[in-house]
Image (cartoon, rainbow, N blue to C red; front, top):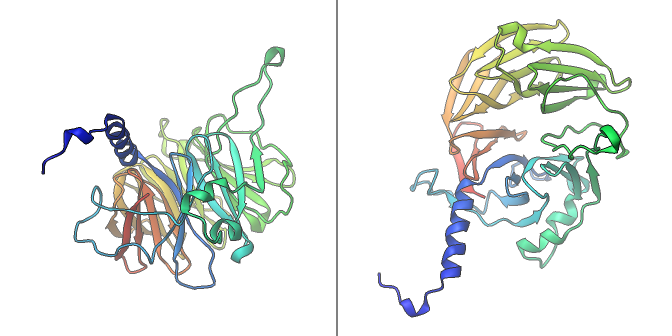
Length: 344
């Protein structure tokens, strides 16, 4: 097809090319299913490497996969979009139930921010981009540590959120003990504890009342892999079982017995895991979603769209959302079929 050179706009062409490249290199670090009175999942919120927090309607996305997944996946139009962070947004979670819940996010700027979900999702007459003007009702920033002569360290990034049942948004204590970068955190509400995973090769359990470490799970010592780190952790519903991703291994621990009951080798580095009843869903640096039982047997593996999957989110109905490189989100039913795949 011919092009009229008289209407050539080099600035527009340059902007289009840069935008296409940015979209292809975008990463969705985390998704979360929005609370709804409808038992079937519809709205899903994504935290992306461009700092945006966006919501998408699963039911409104195309369900035709004749073009396959990956580069030809549908570029989805968000229902609501806001610029949540300066730098990548690493995690997003909901606190509370129903329309009164809070949408929380954290990012590379060291901030943890929260918006009322009702205000974010029900802004009548707004275009998707106008959601970016919504101010957070919660805005916390990581503390800077003082060095010699009063110098301040850079603000450390926040790359994971764990929500407990406390009502006040204030810093209560600092948990110290890891010797390297923190990757993940989960709340163990039944024991008023939190569990953290670090590049020092350990997962630690902390008492939220005293601020002290009550248990150290040394994965490096257990398998003699000095280069490995704890990339992800997950608790089951009873909060008695802990799954830890450590390099190309996934280990399952009985917390009351303080014992590792199984170690599962994987083809690629594990980047996220979640319990689904007495089974574990895991994703990593390969386009695959693995379902594993507690004894370490791989039950199934489903091909998914992201070539490298950074997170998996699970809805109570069993629907899972796998997100990762390329700005891709693959929504998979409880039966293993692909409900939709879209690009953020």
